[in-house]
Image (cartoon, one colour):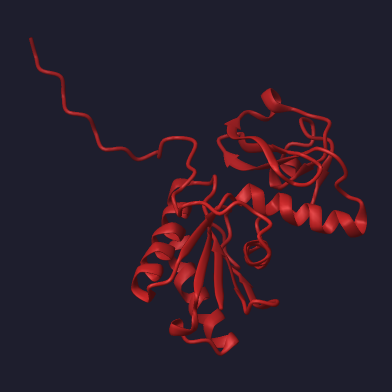
Length: 216
């Protein structure tokens, strides 16, 4: 039984995958409250799925890029659970999950054909962005930049395209990472598995003050 969750976007998403299909998927109803909502959502998902923590065989967690606090909550939780339960923890670039879902959906709708971009909200009027080939393989990025600096007429998956239509006129769904598709992508080997380390791309807002310079 695979437990998957992502905290790289403003909302928390949690899912269970039994090796064949997603059995439970939950999404938080409040934004930017990762610390308060992740643990209860995991508990609810396990209860709804009739799964005990000891039944879990692996954990998949979105590694970002995303805001410092959200990623820290998700990755620390994943590593702690993996250590306590003695099971592997797989990190996945959250942009890769969006790309894989876009490819899967595109097979049915034709929404994504050929090369495309994934852009998510980095706040500060910036986006996290990566480029993908027609099979959904990442070929460049991720980077963080201003929308105008990375503007493109290619199809753009993710919330960044919806937020900045002038820079990305080819906006496409999905908008935010889904734990359900994260689980499907990991179970189906559709994405690269990484160490559970955060992809911050920028320094956290809160830093330890430097020592004062000596007075000469």
